[in-house]
View: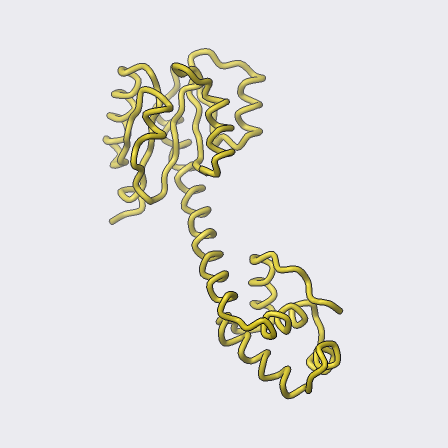
Length: 209
């Protein structure tokens, strides 16, 4: 399955003709899509778990598209959004972009402009999903460490030498080397630099110096 085939473009617009037109365009370039007439329908739907983006009309029945963008963020639902509108203005565009929108297109827009924005949005979502997957894997590895190994890891990535760590935690240098080896093996780190990067991604508090 190609990345494009695995992706889904969600379209929310209360104009059926617009929904049909956009879905036809997406189908012509091999992109899967699902369309909804209201934001409520979208929220009730069962969404496939894969890269996705949302083509969202600014003016929807019962909800403003910009408010819906904020509601999604508040719910922790992260999805790249491309706004489309027949009534755009500069303050509206600025607000949407500041809140993380990928693009703000005023109807009538060029098909290619919409497709470019969609590909950019899907690429952004793929990167985000990959980062989330890597972070989840790192957290899983970190949870396997014993309390002492986590302490040693924090001190190692803060730049302390084995003998300094031994003095800090009140043990022998040989014991520290064993803990350090366990940390490297369990975290699957090939080098100290890689372990430091992992700690940074995990946003671990720095070890005591």
